[in-house]
Length: 551
Image (cartoon, rainbow, N blue to C red; front, side, top):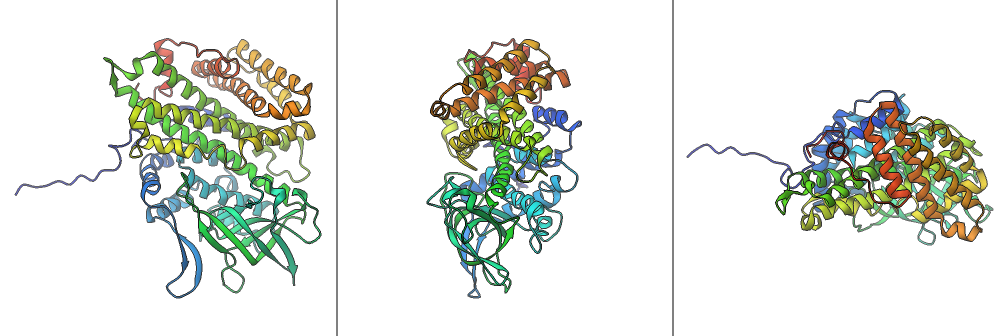
């Protein structure tokens, strides 16, 4: 018999983005990092991992092997742990220890590198595990006391063994309304004991320690009556400290176990001061809302790569799809949206990083960071929905089949307007930080300065005028009208800010493509005009990510 060579393949027959280095190929991401950090960080190892093992493992977990709840051990112990796919466990170990995704803010790196890593990873289930863990690390390091403060080292990947964190705020009766929380905490012999039920608990069965909101005796009603506690997985005597009642069946984010957790006299440690839990919780949520922003862009990028590469080789009506005008329009819109979201998310990250050591009652810089975070979270979620839907359409019937990745990326995008506070919550919180903290004044002042650093004075001037006019009109309207139009206000501000920031990138790197994208965003998203028709060279420069993919 002749020799038989067995070639082991991945998912290259299903995905056009598989096998690429998802950092090297993303010139816009590298350029924006260069602008905000002063030099381009080396994330090539992560990019390689994200384009191969991680891409395939996330695809497999979504289709075949989500987390499984194990309630009882073979020894008869109540364990309430989750069994992850072995490949997912290995990839998490690589991300935490080999890559150090969560170490950056704690070892002299920056939040930009951390969030860029979530963008590159793309998969929101894997990113959620990393996000709820770094949220916990951030909050414990900043506000907690021993014995739980030092947990941040194992949570951030600075110290083994690995620990995973979680943030359990949501209850069935309130959802995003944390003021409706009914979980109670009572102190006894120097230890707090919590009783309650957390309805959406990401990391259930995985978390070694969770941040939990609860009410103390005599606290006022509403959000101002909340305190924050660190609740370890096991009690001081080694027994289970809380119970996972079930895992939820979800349409996406399969890699992260999401369940319902019951607290029964669960041991907890007060974080910070009693009665200030809502401030700590919202600060923690700013970390995850920024993660949602960057993660949404990662989802959009994966879908875009699949679609753009498909249109470059697929032929219809005698030409490649990319040669048809309407397809060109779709690709231009999708890529322009991604890059608009990219500068907006990193600007919000920069302002957050500068104010990240602020404590209640906070400074104007912190409130400005809040404002930008609310805007970035909503705008990038919209971008993820639009780009993934367009990408599905560009693949035609293939885009709707579950065997190909684009369908999954659109499914994953659906969570981004919901996670960490829905779009309505973001819009209302934006109004609150404007009305009570005057954050819009800081925004106008900042954008006036940024508009001076531009490749095209006219584009930045129009964007700045749009911001000023939008805010001026808001200030003279009745409160009920402002609330009704809040999401429209947020969207207008977001895209106008993005146009100015894109002009900043254009002039700092002296690259015309960012100016062209700024014009597209301003014309299409703010003024509602058709997308400008670019010549062939400029079109290819934009949609090929600056020549990184073959169009």
